[in-house]
Image 1 (cartoon, rainbow, N blue to C red):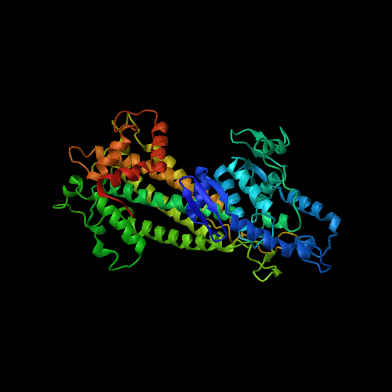
Image 2 (cartoon, one colour):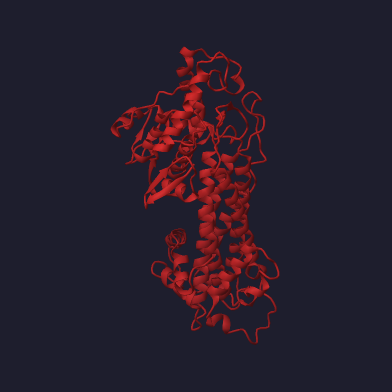
Length: 524
């Protein structure tokens, strides 16, 4: 299936494919979704196969039978609408806090993508209603726990499907919550001019048998990590300046030619360019008795580069999953309705776990650089903890504690979820992926990495300021200029948390990368 961006905030959903950019536009930027007439025609034509099977005497899974471990029971015609309602109501069994709005929007858009493919057998009204809910800014409340990442993200998608039926819990465009404890969801739909769907045969399964939640979170994590890895190269380069390190280990002839990992070469190139023109680096090229910098400086491109290559592999898996039609059963082009195991989340779960390892290790090496700048025994002449008056002032001592706590948390989050299968459904689903859980912990790990880089940024900027009158290169100067608009430099101790939060905002917004690029051009 294809979604093509018509304007800045509009996406066309057709039968031929979607892009990662489409998913992020809908999830994070409220892009309007339009379904092409051809896609609706295809959905209607494929539905005819389901209608024939629904009226046949031959049992067909999910059409005239029960589900999962109850698949052997034949369901009579007059009970099939109730069967669909019961499926969605029973599977909407999530617990815990509501997940983020962007996650819900991503999984709904991805499910709409599959419904519009013509391989699931739903009626056009089902696809249209899901798109209408998205466009109205209505967000089903999806709970943190409930998915095992096999048979798809059943519970999260069921919470969304329940809203299409005019039931369950949802928030309106203004954030007002509708549901059992307040006004009913049907009223929220009515205010948006949306008629609740009465599900027919097969449609309940089609709405919930997908890897959409874990895939949506994977796509957003990849986008975030790509931005953070560019920023990690910047903060690492600034730390090299602050610690009087050398830029010679980042020369191109030492990377791509000798060890052809593309991510490593890209990170080394970024660092070398950020350090170009640095008077601080030039000041000790001659007469420096040190032979080599510590690993956290010298090996920064090897670590961040390996992270880049892992993200690229994860993107390959994500784009394959994005091109997939995940449902059970599916309607094949020749009209056959067949079951298989494509809903199993293992391919997505594995790379979600890989990325949590990546985020933890990049955070870990950044924390080591920060700690080195704060230790007078290793900082090449900087005051203890980069304090204004060490002893009276504590400087960034506890900022590094915060950073260390974040790294420790990320190390725990790097323990893979995908190896922790727990059988379910009376042993029918006896090996599950836990992909949803892998995705949830990855989101936290990405957030931790952003905050760790923010602390390194603050420390490296303070260290560079303390090297005055020596000056950083043009990229470092541009970054410091942006940071110093809202985060003060060295001096007496002050309330530090707001400054770290502001640095976190600057890292997350892309302002730090943009500042460096204003001086040295686009970074990798």
